[in-house]
Length: 314
Image 1 (cartoon, rainbow, N blue to C red):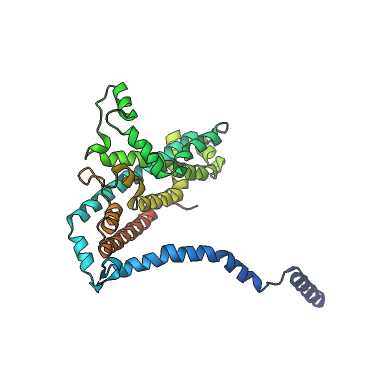
Image 2: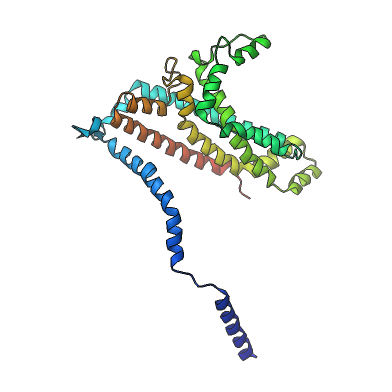
């Protein structure tokens, strides 16, 4: 009996060896060849500039490299003692504090409203995502007309509602909220689609069981839906935070590259751009860029630590 069992095991191993295709030596080289363009692009346009910026922050770099000298931490100290740097940091954090909660709340609200509308689901999802796939600069120019205090459509709407007009981008108090309004319009669709895909993956019997147990609509939303989509919300919170701290295109376009009025829309990335490409202080700008990277890392670690208290994985 044992001999028959041993013989059947050997036969099974032989069949498995026959069915298993031998790994060809050229498969690895073929995969590397397909990955090579992406790796070269990342090396040339991502990792090499990042390494150069890190090194450049420790030098007094002059244009074309003539007379470049080692500076140590002097550029970092100058950035930390520059009043405009702290003002730009404050505006960057304010912009992020606007964007992160409003984006998450808006994405969840819109996704819950249109989830399950099977007849118009595809059309509504496309309309919601459409602003996200449009170029930032092109749509920013359109919004400049909408924000115009004299003939902009936003003030026309306020007039119809019998509300006082606003100066929008020309006001130091309304400039940043105006940029946030455009950013929400442009980027909210991506978050809505992500939340919709997560909602579609929740088993319907879970909601039905909660309804049978007597849970109301609000209780099902806060006790069932939010915990189940909390990993997705955590991902969107991290992505939105990083994107808000790196916001540039819409701020540059809506402020005309000045960050005004009265530095009201000057964020760290815009200040870095102005320092490097308008005033040609490349080493100073590199030091501020490294400080921005450090800020992003710190906030990401804080979010990761806080997520242990409110993110629930199935």
